Length: 365
Image (tube, rainbow, N blue to C red):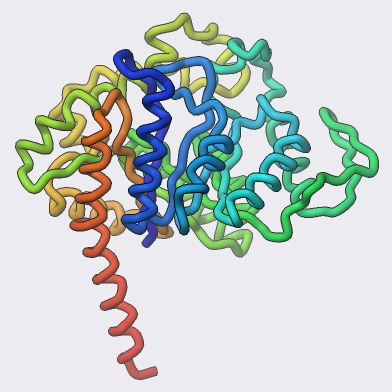
């Protein structure tokens, strides 16, 4: 089991963008010291309470100068806002500057972003997205190539520099096609934060079945907002404002701005954003958020039990990724959560994993 951190870089009133980025960099350095496997950030535009993480590669390049081992991960590169060949080139350079410590995902991005970028919400957007993915990896994996698609036609091209390794790649979302595509290509899937297992059980079952069909291995990363203290009442008190803000921040592009027309969202395959799900989540009472497994708040033992419950039902789970700095959380709260999780939760699973290895080695063949 791997353990990582995930941040949306939600920007709330009272803290400048420069202050937020400075705090996140300190949190990355601390995560490296504590032994977390990776630090992931979203790529997102236009909606500050959701995210001001418009250039993850720049953030990672800065953090790399102050860290030694932690892996950096973009979840996800939003393909409609990139030329896939230019993005492939940027990824190759980032991998050099990050000394091989880079992973990334690819996605369509959230349905509220296209109009803000001057892009039309059209039924062909998914088709263009899948062609962009194909072209991105064609460029990353081939020295010279030509490409003849519906949306891209390229003759005798090649990116420079070109990476000499394959990347761990991630997909994330709620559509069946996301899980089918990940299984076909042997990629990991990221379970979006705020959703309990039951909400994506059918898609994860589909992913596992398609992995078996294509001869690939399931690789499931579970993201959850998390806050802990040795005293449960203290944890609940200190986490209340920022976890509630985390949910409101995720819904803010729909609640603080005029959302795109429902018919256009549905036609473009973004029906999730017209279903009222995020707005309903944002109105969830705090105690129901905890009881309903939307967030993990409590003692280290409480969180251990939540993770073990996910392990029991989620075959193919390889990594837990926690969010600790959303919704206007104070810097000290993020550091505290990182520290206590690393000291009291991660060792529990490392010990159990080592015990299973020892037991297996001692069992006669």
